[in-house]
Length: 68
Image 1 (cartoon, rainbow, N blue to C red):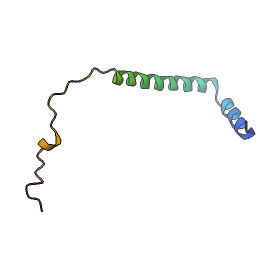
Image 2: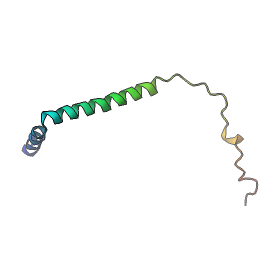
Image 3: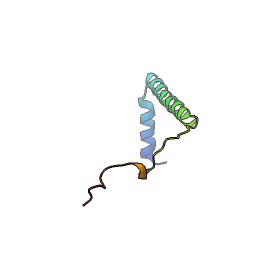
């Protein structure tokens, strides 16, 4: 491993106090939990039966009546 990277990693690990580690672990856990919950809720939605879909040709935009 590159000595510069090793020294940087050691300094970063030593820079956090136990309270800092606890706060970081709690915040990362909350974010991952919320993302997992949201993805689960979205991906397990029941299929929706849509009946009234208008195709693009049925929409009157009124821009073709007085075309140049």
